[in-house]
Length: 448
Ligand code: GLU
Image 1 (cartoon, rainbow, N blue to C red):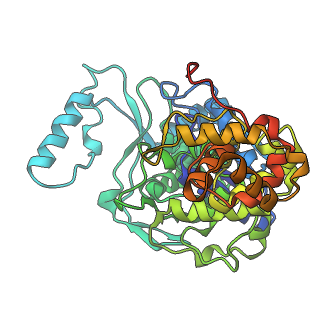
Image 2 (cartoon, helix red, strand yellow; image 1 turned 180 degrees about the vertical axis):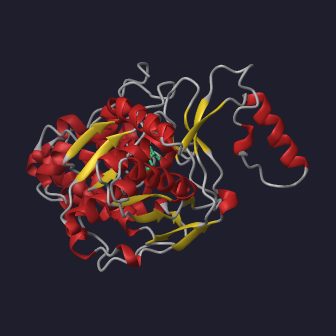
């Protein structure tokens, strides 16, 4: 079984969704089940309803799962396993106070050596600190594991000192809860972000210890730690402060879920084609070909992919997504795709076109009020039903308004679209005829 294990403590980061996508693809390829495990053991940091938001996002992106588990439900098992490890001497109580440990850290810092926990400290403060934590005994031997993306990763014994598995309040740490659950559900393949590489030896040590006390074979797990996603400009890790790192932000900006999936699968990978669906990628994606270097998040390229996915939509899909009351408006939206790349951009163009036009404001630094007012009056005298094509309309409108050149065309564009720039007016004209009463209206200059 594979698992995707999000924490309901913040917005889904593009890195999380990338991990979810790859878990889904590999589970499909290996025909193994996929579990979504909501890692909600950190009560203080859990955000109410985030779990639902995560699940909705996964569904929107096209990721389905075979099993859904809330980690908090497994707390009794975590405690039972910790007790077994204590009983067998593979874990121990540590009474060190946070102050004592801080002192040791400072000393290590001053002496320019890495801080390591010494098992001999465990009972030094037994009298003064009645609330011990539980630590798993570290390893005297080096530990290495094969990572599908990064190759072999090795940790030396001095990096494997004893570490906390239960806090003083008996809450399991992330590493312990995670490793216990991976053990319980016989997770055989772990795909996650490379920020977890340093957790992996701890989780392996926990699983080895559990296998020993439960007298079962230690599970063999394939690991794939995904490289970081970097900010395109700064080259630094995409953090929560980068708006585009949040997938819900991207969707709110009008990127389609299928474009986000397409883009995240393409990161660090050379796909056989540019535009594809998640289902399609299951047929050819090869995790061994994923680049081991970090990838830059290129919003411009995502825009390009989104543009192409929007082009591929059926008119009825576009009508639904844009909540349009008339199927013909979806055709108009397709026209606007010439110079738009997101649903929001299309939406704002349509809204401007179907709203009363504001002719009092400046367009590209120039005021067209008089020219627009003249043209508007002239258009009122025309019968669009009789002017079947744009040429005929244009001539009649020029004649009636006595405007020509830029004065005519720019004013007409403003009256028809509410914008100073855009696609060819001739292409818009059929829609103007159909929806003239909605399009040819002016904003009340006193009402704004
Ligand atoms: N809850 C962890 C996270 O969201 C899970 C990491 C893992 O897959 O083990 O980063």
